[in-house]
Length: 579
Image (cartoon, rainbow, N blue to C red):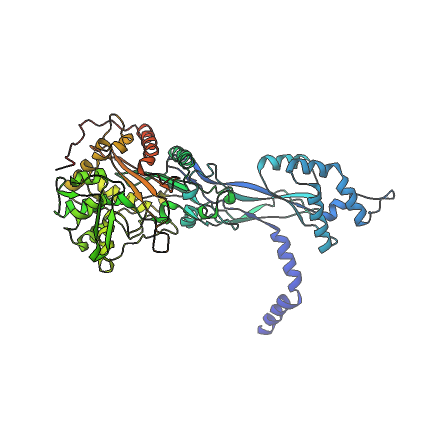
């Protein structure tokens, strides 16, 4: 019995192995990949920001193409003569017209394939044809040309949101932005089907079987408002060009939820054509990756820390010249513009954006206390969005501060942050003092409708509720009482805002020429709902922060209309700015 089994095993594995393998392959038939499409990335209204479409490659069979050309006796022509006939064939001219590819390019592909194999049946001729082109090619009925479908990524809005959505690499995997961050959500799973083919390669009826179903990737639902992103993007582009600036950023955040409704920049990468923008803007979103010294918008954090810890009130005051120096300690700094000596309140210091005032009043608070408040506001730590290549900013411990840095950190120099970090800090300041983590994504919607990857939001109280209200009232003085910032005002709505003009380090111990100008605003003051932040990088002529106010006002006005924000029903605050 054992000998019989051993003989049978030998017969199967050795004697008839090749024949049985061929028979199994014949029964299995020809295998075709069923592509599991990558999932869509959509806006909060379902608008597709990134989607998958079918594209078609066309493969030529050179040996079959040339077999059509024979001599008078019906014998195959020599290869060179057949190639010459093919090059002159009207069908190739028609194919060239449909695809926009020169006939010479087609002929190069044929010659290369035949050079490698005189009986070649494989010469890639056309790549990534869309559906209309596919239909035109198929209408030519070229027997020796076979289409092969495959999924490809498309971005209907192009550069609008490209800095956030990102793009895929040549292998179809996420390479930047949300495409990279949510690769696991979006990636599909390929399947397979097989069929039995006749000798001429035609599938036999009823022989097709799906051996493994394809699975489509999930749909990533973002918080972004596509129309608002488009509006912000267009106005950033216009302002950048008008001011002769290097770049601009703009964001809109729902204060109550932390949802980012718009996150735009100019220049912004177009995922459909990555090389259309300079390399510096292709990699990721400036909102999360680009660090800068925030300048005067940082004064609000210092003021909030002073009020929340009891070191000051809105009416606390200090005699404020336009410059300050202490040669014995190597300290010197000044305000952005000359002004006479004034006895400014803390409200007035914010309204006038005085470096000297915030420093003289702020030195009563310990550096450690101030540092701890900055940390609570999120400075020095990445936001919870976990966006690829997100920067953490730079906030060193007070023990490392020299005499100059001790003062400059109060007005946003000697410390670096990203736009996202500053937006997060102001969100907490406006939201009754409670930080709700920023979010770009609502979740990953699966085929069965379930939502996964929903961000967990753990709120944190940063400052007291009373401090939040006080800060909004104080910052309302900026558009209300500062003539330079009057353009921020919108009739019927109470607005709290802070402008900023920052110098940027040159990497050699000094500062580069030009300024980084910003406006951060929260509205309506009596019911804070939205936050708008605009940053313009290095406008020509060393323009100050007021040059950014028209851009802010334009975006704010659109937000009011888009979300039908009700007008304020209370009078503006009227805190004293001088003592």
